[in-house]
Length: 279
Image 1 (cartoon, one colour):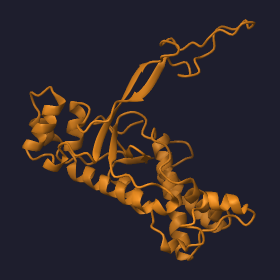
Image 2: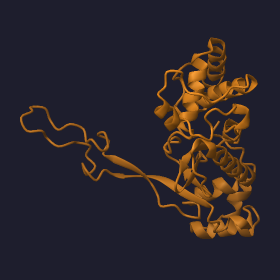
Image 3: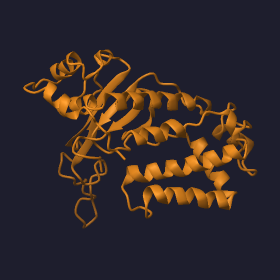
Image 4: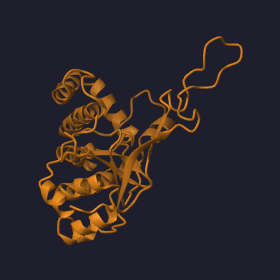
């Protein structure tokens, strides 16, 4: 998990030996045939780098403002939670953000292309749940893997959770699958918990397919709330009539990458650094 195969790693490293400019390194990888020529300047693919800077509110010392009438010292800064550091993502670029990132993506071109294709398939599968189709993919390098937020629509997760609550056997089987992926509860960091939750939900989704289930809200749900949570395009439909978003989502995991969420600027995919999976 979060460990791409990267079969062309050494080839990519040799190709850019002696080069210090990122744009030139990316061009060299294209020239050597390590990276597909179509990737050079492709507007459908962007890259962002995780960075940190001093908090602009506390100016990096992590301390909040003193409150008159209180004997206690200044509280932690509310913006950075006392760390003095503000994380941020670099401006999107059509070129990987540094030399290491150039090597990262060039070392696994087939896996990267497959992950992008699956991300677009996933995005299209959620249109019936009210998610807009986004043509571009934004790769995030480094930083917290789940910084992009929850990739799945709340209505879908609500429907699956409600169905599991009504079927004890289904609920237990889904939990068993989750524990197989995750191990002991909260024993693994965030991205692994997310993978376990998605595997659990995928189990529920597959079971409901076999039951020929329909998408319906709880019996006691207000009609207005029901229409707000479940779009007309899914409400009352059999699950078998709708695309299964878990198929492409879990296949992205199997490639060693992670899908963050869908934002107006692109579908967020996370690529772990060469030193290992992200924490």
